Length: 123
Image 1 (cartoon, rainbow, N blue to C red):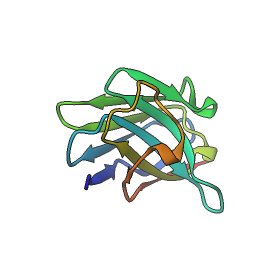
Image 2 (image 1 turned 180 degrees about the horizontal axis):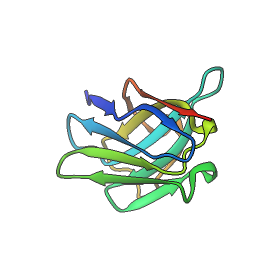
Image 3 (image 1 turned 90 degrees about the vertical axis):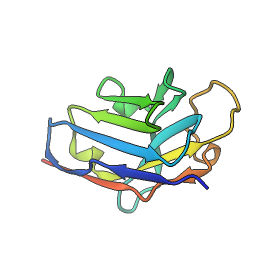
């Protein structure tokens, strides 16, 4: 059972930045960030395979950067130029076993999930 622990959430002004972290209890091959705003479906934000191949949802491209420190089993999400629409609970997700090199943004591809960290962007 892989445990995932997110941190780094908080309140920020529009246009500000925030860096989220997610520490995994063991090595995970494929990881991703998802988010869920009140009353909305959980949606993908970004994903990464190993520390190399990345993928982003269109709404965050150019503003968010996903990265992974494999030595520390830690996933990061650097969020810049934040907007009120980015307000949500952000969740880390992981898949341990190797499948392919596709940094998928599909929820069902991920086996393990963290408890989430809240990001609130004030207008």
